Image 1 (cartoon, rainbow, N blue to C red):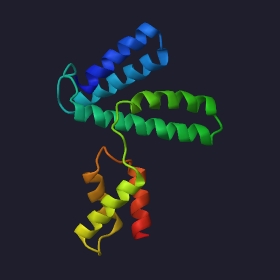
Image 2 (image 1 turned 45 degrees about the vertical axis):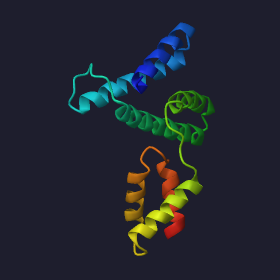
Image 3 (image 1 turned 30 degrees about the horizontal axis):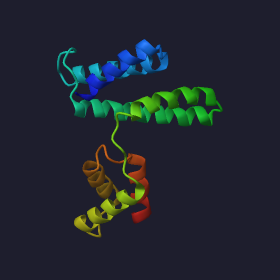
Amino acid sequence: MTLQEQMKENMKAAMKERNMTAVTTYRGLMSEMTNAVVAAGKSPDTPADDDMALAVLTKESKKRKDAIQQYEDAGRPELAEDEKTELAIIEQYLPEMMSKDDIRAKAEAKKAELGDDVNKGQLMGALMAELKGQADGNDVKEVVDEMLG
């Protein structure tokens, strides 16, 4: 069962439970997946493959995290709670992210592979390509900044 099919099944269950927050979140995700399929030049009724679905989920997760931060900075915790609920729904489909220690180990290995004269941009690009979907970009940036100052 693909991620998209799994989400459709969960959306049906949420409808039966009358969990409108979950239903709205799933509908938004389905819409974004359809948009991604169309952007890839395919017919709108073509199902999204798992790679496309993960890309959409990652993007939507990042949007929710940004919104949570902005709401909290603006002193609107009630709006941040709604975003946190949606984020929890999205994160159940995302793979577990690597810890900073794991990222650091990969970064040190990649730095040794690329040589000591590597700059932040090169190391960051190489790591993000290798760790795509496995590590949070902000965590990778922090590790690289710590390593290369």
